[in-house]
Length: 454
Image 1 (cartoon, rainbow, N blue to C red):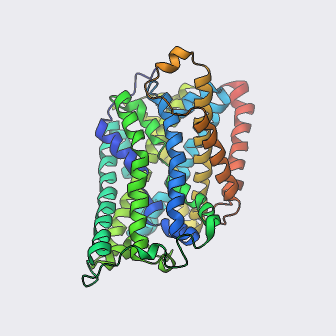
Image 2: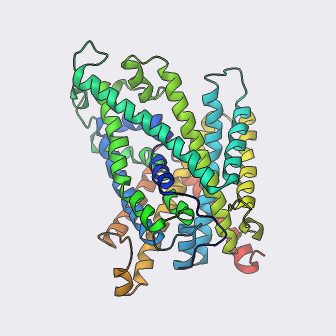
Image 3: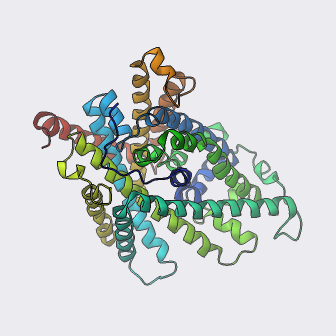
């Protein structure tokens, strides 16, 4: 493995990456999207989140095994390039760039929608443009500025969930907001049972649930600018499973204990209903602020990730050389500006495209994320095969039960891709995703492979 590019400054501290990795697993998918998963699986959606979370944990451990000892800006794209070959590195890097561009387009549109709650007569495109400019400027300042903003974005989401869990438990155990009458946990099993739609419902909810985990692999991307990656990366990855148990399963357990699962509407956030139930005024405004920060956080992370991927692709001779340059602040300035310029398309689309189209487009991100996760696992398997027994023993952060856990995780992610064909909201990803891959293959074989990008 090659060394980290010396031009990038290691400005991300332990607290930045720890909170960023925590915030990456907590997004709009939990605050707003969880209602759809609950409708599909009932209270047994807890099993779906736990199952998906387990394999995400395996994937992160596989990434951590390489990233801890070889922290580079391109992360899994660079590893794929060096272990699997140029084509794998090309596909992984450009695919990851594309999935974050698509995600960011949806997120800056979401910012416009959220702001209309407070400013109903204002145009969405104006807020989308403001969010894009703000997040781009933050990323241009320095890696530390990105980390600091992401730290506070994550803190807002964490505080909101912890507060909701505490208030929910007070209602469940002590009757807060219910005249002192504790309601208990019986709602989890008294409405057609814990698994009302059978085990098939648990499985059917997987494509919805896996979208919520998109972004957790960003820990690997930040490794290239971490001050102490051998200490920070293992700590962040090892706590992924704990975070999932507390923030996803804990929060949804409380929500479904308070509200029968069949009374939770996809039109409203379960979190809004929770806060309103315990008598907190302006619950809608509070949650709107939280999901607004979640959308800004996703856009912030997306610009960071796309900038680093373009930077890495440039150094692999798979993108124009100009994107490999670093500005005075120690960040890939040209790559960040390019990503920001492409994201202007998202602002323009606010004039012409219906909001529902963005819902479908974001499902493409799920396809791209699963492709990335599988590449990470395949890379780690081959990486291990190339090591001697002594080199294996000297790894700082070894994957447990390898390679069995890696092969099992690949099979699981492929199964989720198959399930996407049976879900109306994710089916389009199986059309757009392969088309994008075909375009990348055409680019590679007709331009990059034969001519090389100068």
